[in-house]
Image (tube, rainbow, N blue to C red; front, side, top):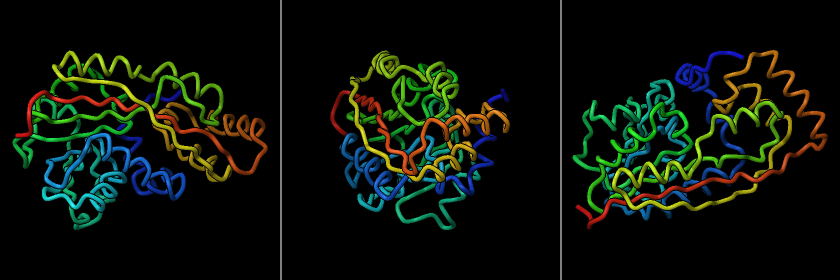
Length: 258
């Protein structure tokens, strides 16, 4: 097993990230709509996408919302944020920073407070989620909302068995995230959403080989190839069909909007 280097993983994957992450034409619009709907976003909100990567979801939200204040695309990887383009699309402002930087007020934001923020499949990268989520909660305006979108404790992806087992060992429990946000003084609850994925098997195997999930960066090339052979044997069908199920942890600061 290779040592897990999350930042290095995304730096290497940046140029091809969107290609490996877009499962199909419906996935990004579906998730972006769920984020906007769950957070009850409005065009006047001051918004941040924490751990935005290449801005796949922020780009879609901005196009639909046409925000008066640009959505902050916050990510520690400059290479990922460069994929937004120069200049970035209307309604988006890139910011090279980590969730911890925002939580501990180590960077200046263009907004004094935030009305809404989301973390999409990035909370498992936080070394101290309780502390970081508490700090992020402190950046919310009265009535501000924070959404954590994450995979549940178990998944039904057609990965090789060792990867599925390691996922369960590493993945935080969504109920623990609810607890951290409540401890931070927010009203928090848990919901779920599911989207069916249909993807060409060879494309998916290519995504695994490219280590599209950070989890896969913990495996050597030979371990990945062995896993792919296991997947081929378990899934002779040319098109893989499986559920992509997510936990949506929504938290809100009491009080009216600032």
